[in-house]
Image (tube, rainbow, N blue to C red; front, top):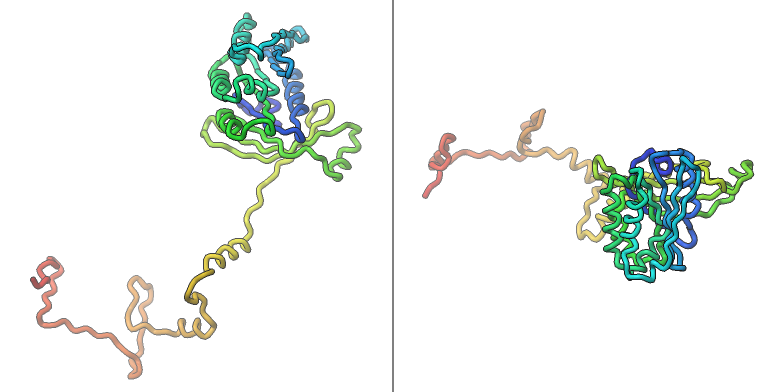
Length: 307
């Protein structure tokens, strides 16, 4: 799934990448940008809006037909009272003279939310607007989990079509040995991906491990399959259900044998083979003879009632 998202084979209107200080997503973002540039898509413009503590917003537009990067820097916007996100949309309309499509990347939504005092309402409206606009083909945002309120992060994650969680980036010794022949530095990303399908509206979950090199090329993708529960766990669950009972539900071998040899004094309804009872003096029988007062009428059973 992650490889299809990087190569844009899997359609996703909005992608949220959630990382942390220990598990940073910078290299993953650069891999996404490189894959986009290598496609040389003349009809789509890549716009990266990096934020910083210097209160400036930088618009970076890659022009594939000229093979150059055009930059527009707006200073001190985070110290003003204007809507930064609306400014992004206005800048797109201003630069879209050739009616191109855009891919928007915001590399740190934490600082954007801080501008709105951690109120996610404006950002939610921004994501919804980007999802509706035909000139914006994709929105990619990065959120740093440790510096963001959990409730705010949960609200934001619900409006994105795809959410990518970076759980681990530490390389094991066997993994280092495996890639040692490449003579490249390898970055590892253990990912949990929740992707909402537009056809079925169901959320599909994937667990994958992504390996990329220092040139931001994908080296390997491993899919992690969920292990099925063992039957032993089912037995333990059944034992737990029987705990605390005041009566014994288990039968001994003698009790099981007596149960099998028990002959019932009646015939079971619906049984394929009727029970044949031998006439022995020691066996008990059930016999019922109707009384004279009984008036059995199958046509109208209500007439049989005496009142």
